[in-house]
Length: 112
Length: 113
Image 1 (spheres, rainbow over the protein chains, first blue to last red):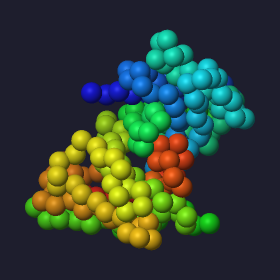
Image 2 (cartoon, one colour; image 1 turned 180 degrees about the vertical axis):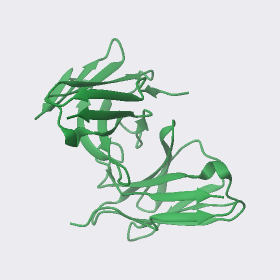
Image 3 (cartoon, rainbow over the protein chains, first blue to last red; image 1 turned 135 degrees about the horizontal axis):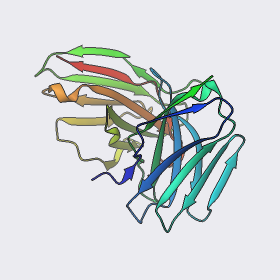
Image 4 (cartoon, rainbow over the protein chains, first blue to last red; image 1 turned 90 degrees about the horizontal axis):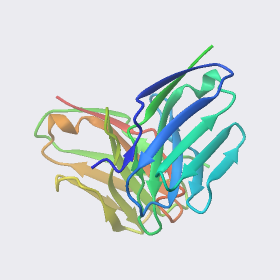
């Protein structure tokens, strides 16, 4: 049972434009969400997170939006840069869970 | 400050063998989690240790086991290897909460032939 879903395995975006990565979840207990970025041959690195008490969190070029009623979150990257080409994982958890439930990832390719 | 160190980086084993992977967390971190990454499956949680105690366990068969030492270093063991165990095994360390402050190592790529 895939509790966190990233339905787009890949996404290509022109450099300078906005990249939007989507994530859906099914477990209503999830109250904290994270995005990780992964380059080949490296471990995932934390990008940005959001608590369920918020609907938006911004950090530089990265913004995460949370729609609790739709059980949907999205990561916006603007403007997109070539170094953003990587696989992006959405993850979810809740207090006391002590683990992260990951989606299957979206490979983002930024076209120069 | 050194990051999370996993050894070895690459490993090739034969079906039926057993394997031990090692993870050294960031200094001062007491929580170590293990994840398996396979194509199309994302990262699947294996188990998490905090102060030498297993605090949480994922849905993996008993062939997968782990432990944590008093210095917070952790090992995971897979016995009776199967072809389907081929994957990238990732270790993450956290100061305390395993689910909000996780820093990942580079992983160990295990290939079972």
